Length: 284
Image (tube, rainbow, N blue to C red; front, side):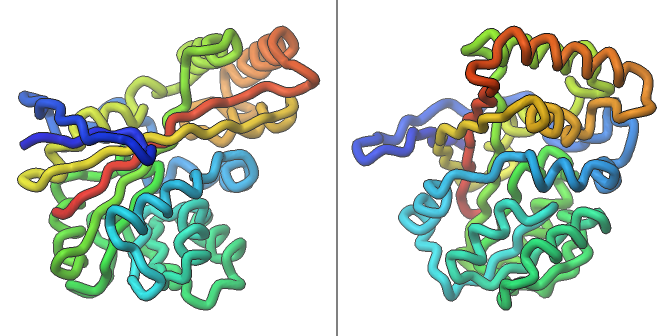
């Protein structure tokens, strides 16, 4: 199989890259984790909804152009969390099953999106969505698929998708190079993160072609930036499931480190978090 990688631009051309072989596809998320994936964000919901980045509008443009997404399509947004990507789908006019296993995240998502009539909040997992067979036109997962049991998830997505349906997996990949702040922030996570290396999503995106196999997978990349004062930078840090919270060992030292690098690198009282939003899409 081959994966198609492209940059989103009017004159972009498809670039074929060889399929990477001999990698372990399944069970990566089980190794080195201190807590099960479905429980990791229960105590971080408020920071998550306030400080995590959303997703570029170009992602929806891509789905409309390449996957022919229309308002009448039904979407299962799996591991929907607090609804950051769900909101874009609802604003597009889609009916959305927001499937989320974590009670606190699911309830927050239902609360912040309560004004949308086409939202159905579902207690389910990627491996067992509880949705009917051939019930949706799209399955999406934003900032989440690295937590899934990929073998079982693929089978479940195939089951709930209608013939010709699309699977769209999305990650905001925080850049770790490019500015002194980004480099030192990454070092802060490497120093104080509990299982940071084990849960980085790149372990899944590196083998995403095998998830889509035997179909081909296409990729598009978009740029995204967040600007924060110190309070926002602290909230962004504490929204991550792999860092200590107040009362945990290493918390005070980590926050001292954040304050130091913020003071050293802030311009006009702000620092920038930069991301590459990666979108993988195809049939299953």
